Image 1 (cartoon, chains in turn yellow, green):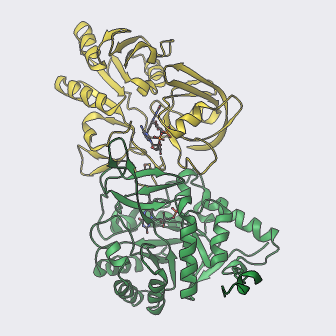
Image 2 (spheres, rainbow over the protein chains, first blue to last red; image 1 turned 180 degrees about the horizontal axis):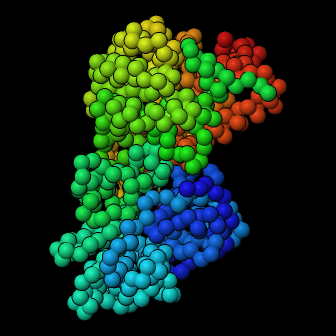
Image 3 (cartoon, chains in turn brown, blue; image 1 turned 30 degrees about the vertical axis):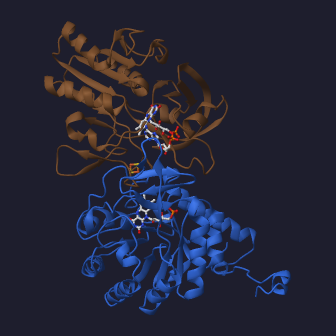
Length: 262
Length: 315
Ligand SMILES: Cc1cc2nc3c(=O)[nH]c(=O)nc-3n(C[C@H](O)[C@H](O)[C@H](O)COP(=O)(O)OP(=O)(O)OC[C@H]3O[C@@H](n4cnc5c(N)ncnc54)[C@H](O)[C@@H]3O)c2cc1C
Ligand SMILES: Cc1cc2nc3c(=O)[nH]c(=O)nc-3n(C[C@H](O)[C@H](O)[C@H](O)COP(=O)(O)O)c2cc1C
Ligand code: FES
């Protein structure tokens, strides 16, 4: 965990309302594990006040990249950044994906900007010798950065403009029909509604599913108690997404306890 | 080097900057960012007799230069606190003030008595004013005779520093401060969060689950300063100034108005080391102003009237 003022290397739009921001930080690049996130201050002003949470999307050497949608004040400020600008970053935060273990195939399912943690996770899985495939969905082809950032990608679009017509759950079903569900784990990130549907699908088939959650945070480091999600197992009522999450076995949490954000 | 020490009752704080309750966990979560022994002190999350789960999500919402929270006093309870948190705070050299919350006078007394038996507790801050719980909390904090009674009962039970943390959600905070002073409190902490609210206009739903919640952050600083000023005029015991402090300058404002110590809360969510930086900033200011001691700042507000105002009958 570091707090560091880094320098922006690149700020780009990579698809409809999908932007990336890259910066240099040797320490963060080296310390980050798959599924961890950063808490980034949009600017030095008191408004917006709080940091924004973003998964680490890609790491190449000292270069760290995030990928995001513009949804409000903070993200609009990020999109106005230019190379050379400073950025106040705190991280890496959260518990990484639990991706080690005995299994052959990892299916990484993402919706929209839920693509964020998948490249770092995919690379770590490949390094462990797992077979990695990605299923990535969006409303239309224009919202997908189809530029080689995912390992073995299969796409799903609501309008059929790229890949499978329908959602990622449908696309996963099609994949499993063709390839079978043996010795496989699913890792997913995306809107709560998608995670919920995927959870139902995987539970019904006994497929292990780990989800990466997002919820509003004030601190990101466990000092405010602001980010609870209800537990489905164990004897504690709540878990804090920032420090015990954001990556959970789907069965351990009650997703519906989270109010929807965007 | 100017002196930055402040003594209240039998506790000497090495500088006037403490972390505010509920905004720094148990003081052990941020070791990557600062050495807690360099803070004036650490005020713990409010501790209750039994663990509390806290309120359902959504617990926080950002507002313009501020935030709302409805944490609902989620905490590990006094047993776990004393077993697994306090010894570590002691080891790390923190000056620890235990903040206590309760739903009955008996519960306040019980938690305090349990802490009395432990080493490493420098003093207490009593949260009579949390706006986020159904039972107790604000009911005590807005009822002056209750605040007086809590102060009296706790004073009988401890020789340690006893500060009462007041809610600003009352007509006259001075009256509450006077009641605390009369019952033997060593200090009053001003202020806890203001009651606030925010609505998502697309869904027409409140942004936090409890509909209203505690408003904090830089947006509240001017109102908090006015509350400290009001308390300053009402009592002569030390005041601990709280509300929207983001910088050394903010902290110095509170001290000039009359605070002997300050607490930094919401700022820690953005910079967990803010307390240490603010303490260093105060020291720099004292040196620059050629002041020997931070104590000379306290209550040094110049309210002498401009002649034109006096002439206009404003005296
Ligand atoms: C662990 C984690 C990882 C995330 N990773 C990504 C990512 O890789 N890419 C991406 O585009 N987004 C990601 N998000 C969501 C991202 O944090 C929000 O989109 C962002 O905070 C919106 O800020 P804003 O000022 O633009 O929006 P506003 O709506 O103006 O923000 C208002 C407040 O609400 C909070 N907020 C709004 N939406 C969200 C949200 N969905 N989740 C959490 N807080 C929110 C903001 O932080 C801010 O405090 C992640 C969230 C979490 C918790
Ligand atoms: C998330 C959060 C949790 C808080 N929890 C407590 C608490 O448990 N007990 C308490 O006395 N005050 C609590 N407070 C109030 C703060 O200690 C402080 O009085 C208030 O936030 C104003 O200061 P600030 O503007 O610097 O944050 C909390 C504040 C916030 C923002
Ligand atoms: S965001 Fe503060 S505890 Fe999780």
